[in-house]
Amino acid sequence: MKRFMFSATLAVAAIVMVLSAARAAAAEERPFQASVETTFLGWDADGNLVYSGTATLPHWGWTKHLARVAIQNKNKATGTITVYFGNGDMVNIEFEQVWDGIWVGDYWVTGGTGKFADAAGGGTITADAREAGKVVLTYEGTLSY
Image (cartoon, rainbow, N blue to C red; front, side, top):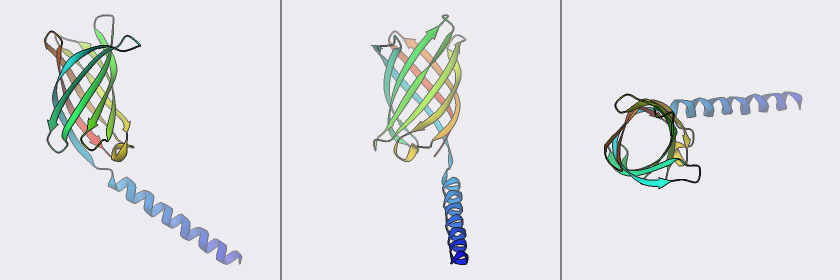
């Protein structure tokens, strides 16, 4: 009986290891590049600026981008962006930027929903205020899921 239990435990451990390795191997890093014209919607309850825009991206299709931005010391911005995909899945992004004629900085993918639940990645992000109430967000980086 002890020999059977030991064998069964080893078999279960082997299956778990194989499934974990398969899931890790399934996470594929893909380019995440976008240029999205957003429109100022107002302020949220925390005083963050809120922008929204849509874009059709290569490989990803239709997307909606909802950004919440906090400006600090007139030359630093931090915030979050939620990217909604046409199938209802979402990716969550955090970013930090500094003012250099346009807003320039880095972003980090912090998960999401659906097939993006364990998403990771990151890259650079710029925000260019081309006219009053409009900001063009440009992402250059990767997305793994």
